[in-house]
Length: 435
Image (cartoon, rainbow, N blue to C red):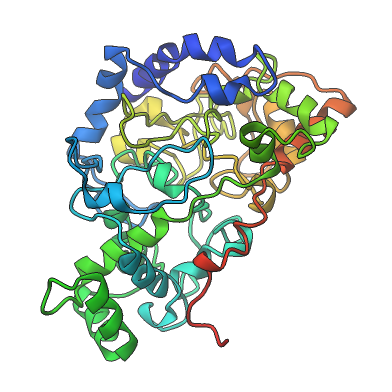
């Protein structure tokens, strides 16, 4: 099944629950969790999850080949290390998927937190993972396009790491990169573009071994290993820390899951009704507890990885996007995948500007303009074109009209998705900073 056919199939599979989403103000969360027992759903999502597909990625996501294979939790009724980890999940959140070969432990998480914030693990010692994923900005960086440790401007923006444990794939447009343990190799060692810019795994291991703090941390995280300071263990720890970056304490969550009717303003409640209605169509791509159709979790019946062309560009009248940002097509080579990108979660969206994969829209109000027009029109310059007329655009991006009050209401709802505690939670903060 082609990627575009798979997208359409996935839409049909959830059509029944989507019809329920418009029934009430917040029904889209409860009714559209992505659960399905339809056997076709498993077939539609399982192919990419089970195989690397033989594709390679030529730049735009780190320039490294990406292997497939969805991370799965260990099965069976007997307790496993995964079952024993205290996730402290928000109400309404299922358990994340955890690879059987990397069970969660507090010691591994703490080691990963130190690695995440360590600037000495970049080639020139100037950046850490946290340089592009800042906690105060929901683990983004406030830039339209990220800048690597050597000053190289990247083609795309840094995605939020909030609830990354629940995301089906891990970049804007690579359907093959499915595991945090493998994804971490890209920013650390990748050279197209250069992010952290370490040349080899041996260099990483040498720098880790030189810091006596890591001797103790690795020993605690991997006590069964006589020489635990390895790149492989570092990636496991880094992935474990990232899986703990769970955000679910926004005013919206208090209203929806805790029954706090004072948590949302009247405007936000009205905005939620608009968001979940067929007129705006927002909920088709931003649904469920994570407000994204790109969501996975333990024991989910099928694997989702839809990507969408929203009419952001149309350079040639045939739907072309500017290089090197052509979406999933860069991986699959399929013409129909031109301009298809992941729909990220809308959690904390008010603090993650600018928007879209290339940061080309500055504000949430302008994002509403884009979708209200059914695609973006660029009047002149090298990117001139009418995105609303793209033949590759998703049929869900049809345009709509909003009154001034309705615009205010939708923006109020989007702003209610900010989890202020997540932005300052000490569990996710820099352990290297001076007390």
